[in-house]
Image (cartoon, rainbow, N blue to C red):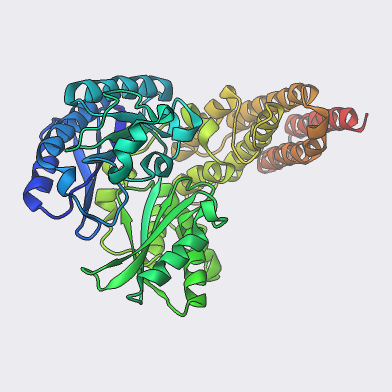
Amino acid sequence: MEPVLLCTPNFSEGRREEVIGAIVGAIQGVEGIKVLGVDRGFTVNRTVVAFGGPPEAVFQAARAAYEVALKHIDMRQHQGAHPRIGAVDVCPFTPYRGVEREWLKAEVERFAREIGDTFRLPVYLYAESARVEQRRRLPDIRKGGYEKLAEKLKDPQWTPDFGPVVPNPRIGATVIGVRDYIAAFNLTLNTRSEAIAHQIAQKVREKEGGIPHVQAIGWFLPELGFAQVSLNITNLRQTPLHAAFEAVEEIARTQGVRVTGTEIIGIVPEWALIEAGRYFLSRMGEKVEGVSPEELVKVALRSLMVEGFRPEERLPEWVFGPAEELASDMGELSLRELLWHFADKEKALSPVLSVVVQAALALSVAARISAGLPARHAFAHGEYMQLLQDTLSFLRNNPVDVELLRQLSKRVLRGFALLRQISESLAVDRAPQLPLLVELFHGAIESLAAAYVPFQNGSVSFEQEKHDIELQGRFFREEILNKVRI
């Protein structure tokens, strides 16, 4: 599959249709580019354009957008409710498929330097591209807004990464960087009170002790006739959409108001909506197993009260096809995402595949722990990821046979041996976590042995194979656990 890069620039213009149209036209005019969404707001005076395509085309489209926006937007005349420091306020790049992160960071720096030099525009690098910690968060760079930019640029700590060190009064400054998905999630309240929206935003904002990974602001939108709480969720794996939604709802109720509708600005990954769909189905006491990703997305959008979001246009997975192959991005996936990846494709997880998944997860967590990294992420041994993919492909088109079981037996036992090696490198304070992993792996061995039963038919050789698998599993289990006890 061809590589795909995503880009979601934010422009300080939400009122003049001719300018917005010119910006979008410049982006669409680049061959290979697909526009996933154009979100404009009158009161915030801001437009977000989400697009993607081959990396070279994306950089070309982003440059074209800068050229048009900087020509037509004059920050000296700009008024809007949304914080901003420039005509092109921020331009984030998100790798989607086949884009290596280190390569992307280098290319984004090259792009940022070009933008700064070509347009004489101060450029800050942020998020994963930030060179210093104080520039990782967009609100920190944007503090003081366009109005305080000239004063900020005098501070040596805020010297731009590229471009001139003096402000350009007409176009301001810009922020560029590599980042993961975020969710720009606006929740409309059944009140006209901006003060109430501010109070709710303050209580959910991470900086004020609220929800982790949440930035928030409250405002009144005359075009809606109601107030909104506008969230940026910067880590959807740690703070899912449904968690932020319910937190805002709960706090709103204490203020005597309700959430009556929401909107998602830009794009979110399919898995974020699938997770929300699963959550709401479970909470309603309905079965989750066997529900297709498409249906889960529909459940999520309805439960979150999202308006005007067309998944066939907004979800990268529905526009560009599957994202990165699982094996190449394993270190970034959480364990539940790994399970969902296989469960969604199989609808019902095959018992034989579940053997491999059990074993891979145990090995994954052990490897992650031994590296001193959070166990919530997977980090599977390379040969196990290949085994998962091979087994999945085989089961799609073939029934389980004896030869497959024999291959799995060798590979699963090999995994147990790897687990033993990993156990030798565990720090003392992490050793207590090992027994749980051993039991998970041993459960995979027992499941594998049980899979032999339908093929036995009184065969002594099959009985012996099954016995040998169970014996070796017990051997590895006791050997590893004895090390922990010692």
